[in-house]
Picture 1 (cartoon, one colour):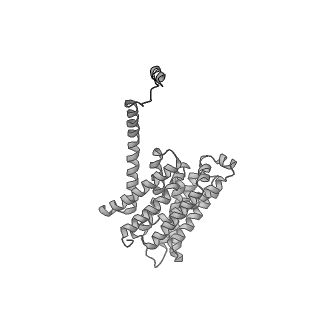
Picture 2 (tube, helix red, strand yellow):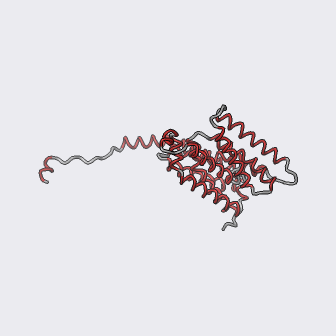
Picture 3 (cartoon, one colour):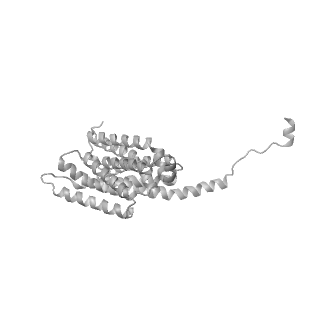
Length: 288
């Protein structure tokens, strides 16, 4: 069954969606969308490093993404605003990576595959790496879910409870680096942030609890990946950008339908009043 490239691509998209969903929720809650973008852009430097040392792409991307995540965490709160710092580091890392790749002699690479993904070329080894990284991220985030959530909602309350917000942020950034490393094959360096942010942003208006939001985001990511994959196959369009287009379409559709659903629900509440049992009359009570 895994000899079918479409099946492998679908399994890869599902794996990345499951890993990106809970992390995307924290990215939205913490308003750190630019952080995910910076980590993803740094992955291009990891590709150049891997090609230079003849090591697996996953190892180089993971190493550089971890270095970027740790560096940003250490430099946060210094003299520069966070968005300025992330902007400088993100674009600098992407530019250095692209220049470094251009200097590699005797190595022919498809930059488009790294920039926008090449999910249709996912092999058995890639699938094992993606699902291994997904399971690792889910275990990390699931084990520390309550602590990371508390540190996200109220750092002061987390400190009072004996939880270090900086430690939880470091765990979150490490998990984010792993997702970037496994997602580069699916949507590429430039579109990884979309896979993190759009499903979570789409699920937010429909969620009453953080766990429900993560579950809905995972479902939206899976639908977009499989739908974008088959749409790309039918339309002969680039797969990674097509997946993001489907995500954007779901975001617009669901956020448009949300107010309509609220109005319809309110209308039904007015038309169909709630039926409450009437108290028994004195006559009926005397019979008892």
